[in-house]
Length: 214
Length: 264
Image 1: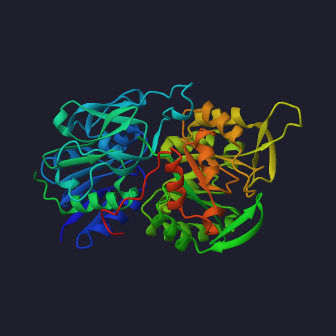
Image 2: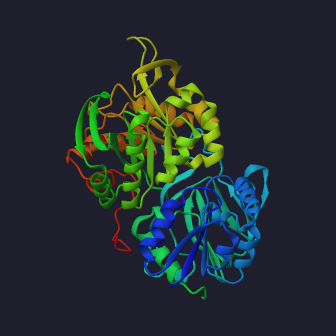
Image 3: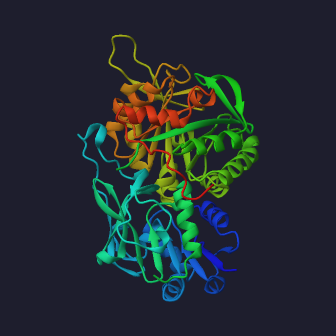
């Protein structure tokens, strides 16, 4: 039995992520915690998060979790979701600019504001709702998930990884943007698998089964 | 590209789904868990719960209902009705809501929206706007917002209010026409378009759906990003899947219900 730790640093709704993991990984134990010692003993970690990036980084530091995440990122399979993905990059331009964890080279930038004269087709910010995800590179987490499946998004900022090989999935919102990144034992999604019905649950099941190798 | 969303709305009164006409004459429409599960399976893109009585006595019932429903569905859930404090927001999110909808409390204290958005993120703060035409015939059209489930006039002009709420931190607006609610005459398209074109955030159309054409109109003519409906789904007139097929045939981009990649 593996233990999957969900890092609880007070940013957002862990209820549905925890519940979805329990649903797809019935033989594993899901540990939702902010205790670095407990999280350190987990076999896998999930870094969730919603809200603003400055608040997120402040809470990670206050709870002494940022070092844990950086250290664990070198040894256990780790999944970032939404803001949890964004903080894995070097820097976000949200909240006047915030240094993040730097697990992936690159930055996080805001979608352009909608064209006021765009009428019915203008692209609102936040990018909110269901969009198709193109699997631009193969990865174990995509197994059994049809390419171009729909996933639920809600975000105003998006990642721009510097290394194109780190981008494993893209979506289109005015322009193509990276919505899934991975390297080594790390994988992260901008969309919410726990809110994306069957395709999302399959992704979580794949992560729960993944040994962190490619 | 992003799909337009179809959102069934469940009005909740003391743990049951109910449906009223013009915010009155309330009838029972089923058990929330059963109704929510049905819409999730039909391919609903989100669900909205509105606690229409919102008396503090009923809060524990609401939390239990939200918890029970959140366990059953894997799509976003918005809960509104009587959300007054940051503690209310936190409790609803903890019970399993993904977003909360704020109405009356935003009118009493617009800074509450800012407080909630900065604490929990703009993505989970929906401001609900109940608007009603108040101009006399031959006068230019004017909508004002109402609170307390549509019972109380405020004198606040609706379009300017919508823009103000976005400036305060609303990540999405739920716009209900009180003139149309429950009438099955269709959305107030003029109201929707005026608000949707005035704000950068997504707008959910609400109030008045009687046919599938009304859904298409709300998106194409009302410029809404999502359509909310209750009675056409509750009464079994149409399934969510039928609604989406109909919309797709008329050129609306919707999320088709794919075969589940994981059996749920």
